[in-house]
Length: 371
Image 1: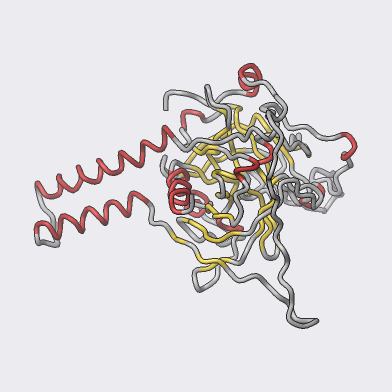
Image 2 (image 1 turned 30 degrees about the horizontal axis):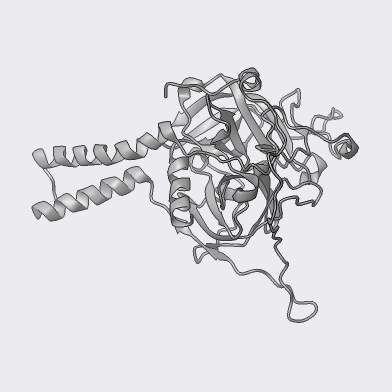
């Protein structure tokens, strides 16, 4: 990739904040209604949601091309020129997939929301001290495992301008996480946040963009389908899990038409060390996950895996609840940021996000199947 993500100073110079260009007229907000029990004392749940486990493009293309040539030549074993033909066919088709790495998927900014490319703001009237100090000094003999690397650079915000309004809280059974819109009805978050059922369904979730103290300025939505490469189940995950620890959820409502959405893009290891990445999430140690936090100027220290699916290792400040939140940056001549990673896991020495250009491939399939 020839171009590089922009630093915060570059973004400030190239993009200026603005109010909404026009009023939102005729926009109807939708809210998920809780299921009604048939009788008192009986719990009622919304039905689980089916989805699609997507074959990794490299594996799927190799299998398809091998089967095609085996049928063409009437043999199960390809030799010599046939193997060269197989390699050429795979390379040609993978070239189309890899083109997505450089191009990515574009974002969208509605005229009906304000635009603030600088750090998100916090309404002074809404400020309050955090209920829990993750960097509190402990008494002798006390221990606390955290992944907040001093100083804690996260801060709470209430800004509903673009792009801050496209991130939100993802409520799943038994807990919550974070996510961001990457299409008109497409949500990118972490695979390990899902409740994976044996019948290839997930329990229903609710996404609320700009969630703040149970306030939902853009409404919220459940999901109707999901796309994933891997069913990641926590709490302990491997490096391979982290590299594919993301899902694209198809929302019931087109919240992106109201809020806009981020673009996506593959991560280039040449960007390691650049302090250009930002993260939004709903950490449990700050306001009990009821308010979003922002941290900017985060470097990706190193990567592992391949450019297709890779682990992004960093020391951004992360606490449970921020899982699924995007790592994003701005690129030259674009009015929207692009998500290049999804927060996955953490330990006391480093944090990690899933990345790679397979993210764009997954989102692209979801957007094609559910426009």
